Image (cartoon, rainbow, N blue to C red):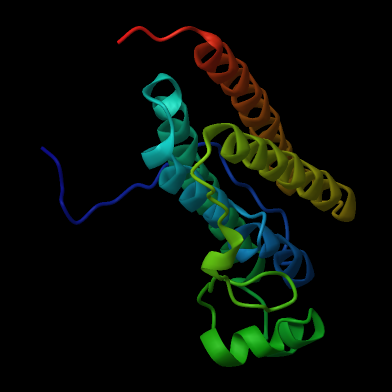
Length: 192
């Protein structure tokens, strides 16, 4: 029998953290609420699917939904990296302003503390233009994950970040395939 008071959250990929590190958490927040972060990606793709041909709509839906799973992984990393931090450690890591405004809670902003904005979401209504925007977004996220991997010596965090980096590569490839599908589709003669 299911106990409704028990909740076990399973992430898309395990997130392990070997030490309290609010400095790294500050950098990871970029992927939480930054222009090229997971929230922006999820909302971009789920918004663009309304003006994308049916041939690739499922791709935007699937990847947009997966980006929310990645957002959850980033939130878990940030939480685990800061849950035992003192207010002094938060301040020394550059998260003093965040701590004063939000306490231990996460908030959608980038690593510099700039709040998330809908201006981060690009949607032109032209399927090819939107897919090229999506490819660029995935490549920028891949680069950010690579730099995050290089800035930490925490092998547990590196493992999760490598998973996320690889997913960005897969998404970029899938968007490239969608461009080719639409180019072929647009090039076929339509009979009405």
